[in-house]
Image 1 (cartoon, helix red, strand yellow):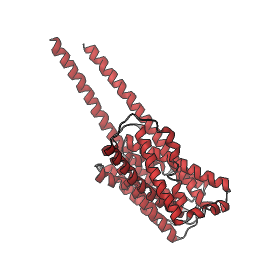
Image 2 (cartoon, one colour):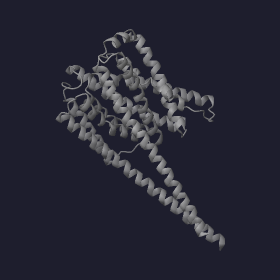
Image 3 (cartoon, one colour):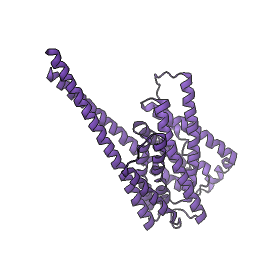
Image 4 (cartoon, one colour):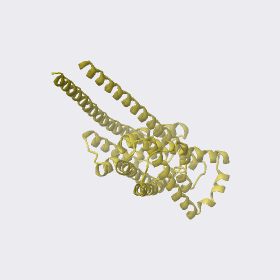
Length: 362
């Protein structure tokens, strides 16, 4: 009898290890999507403005309009949804889609007026905002390591205020630099709010634990955002300027088209990674990976776009990385606690089975 219990416990532990390995593989894949998509899309977005692109609406549209590439992954589902749930889901997608459109516009303005290095480092403030929103919306607790991370990221952002935007991959006045900084800061706060609301939607309304739920969230919120941005393009008259913009684009018409296409695809890869991590872990962890990937774009910008990595930027970058690693360590400690609880539960279950068998045989 005891051998049967032992075998059962070993099988349970083996199954738990396989599940854990699968979980980490999925997290690694989503994390790669975030870092690769974010870095490539940011550089392509900067190239769009550097080569003569001027439309903030077009730069915003490419961030959301690439969702059709995900349609093949919306395989049929056997889930039966009642009408009230459909209304709730539609409301979630509508609200989040509108917020996404506004947030992407702020990011476009920030990327137009800031060099990639300053833009990316300012985006690191998103981790601080997500901590605050997660505290109030998702009941995330503050720990000393999280507080340390927030302080470092705040100091990192403050240093960038004193950094001039001249001599980088763009040439902007001090006024536009400040506008770009404020818009990027606002966009980071908006993105943090979006992540917290997305996590809340998964917990309270969607309540589905599969990849289809992730794809649905990305596709439908991007569909709504695309409609909002297209309305903005026609209302602002930017649609009339596209042909002229294509004609004067420094790298040529084909380069113009390819830039917009691949920027759009890159942002979709990024969004899938973001929503995937929100679904698998939390909005806080998703934003953590976003922050960890931020230093990649500035390094690539220094190499390919000839941005300057000044002393202030270098210090800000180091502080941002230090803050991020502090956050990672907190998640590491949380993971250890979860493993200890699982081990105790498994051990207690095994002891309980042995006791029951001994009592029955007695």
